[in-house]
Image 1 (tube, rainbow, N blue to C red):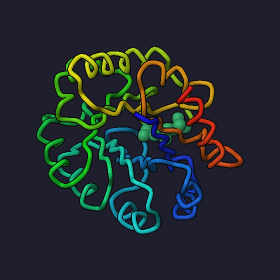
Image 2 (image 1 turned 180 degrees about the horizontal axis):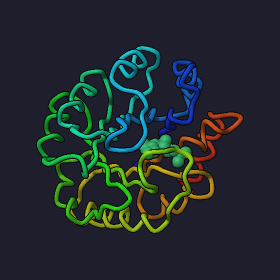
Image 3 (image 1 turned 45 degrees about the horizontal axis):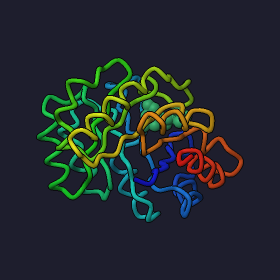
Length: 218
Ligand code: DX5
Ligand code: ZN
């Protein structure tokens, strides 16, 4: 599958969110929206009202990454708000299959995220119910952290299982993805790449996206 580049607005200027998203139109495949509740992770960002408003400001598909406790309660509302892909954390959900089914029924793609300290093996059997598996390449909670290459082992495990079972699934990596790390993530089998600092910290975000895409294809 063609690589997906998903800039994270966590690294953008929150006072100008609509403009920041519009600035990457034509370059980005998805906009990655980090929802944090200061409970599942020790940081607080934005929630449903912002996603609902921002949805009207752009046509780029939204990739919502829920770093919240109780995703069963909140995730469907993001699908209803028009999110293309809704990803919730394995560590926060008792019944990922049920939630994935609910999200798909609401018209969204269903994603499962695996944080730094969580092994992926127990979740490999859930792949048929999922559209996306998000492998954190940092500890979830903050942008601008250093990429952890050892976590790519999980990407390899998911890609291997998807191949063996002939499943079409997006494997997304999130955390520290930049020009010097994206190639190794792609080589491990990732095909969707979240990049916050590497895009919004660049002088020309659209150009940064094009460079990342070229590297992911190489
Ligand atoms: C952190 C978020 C990431 C964050 C990545 O928990 O899930 O999406 O924005 O930021 P960078 O690309 O700067 O590591
Ligand atoms: Zn994220």
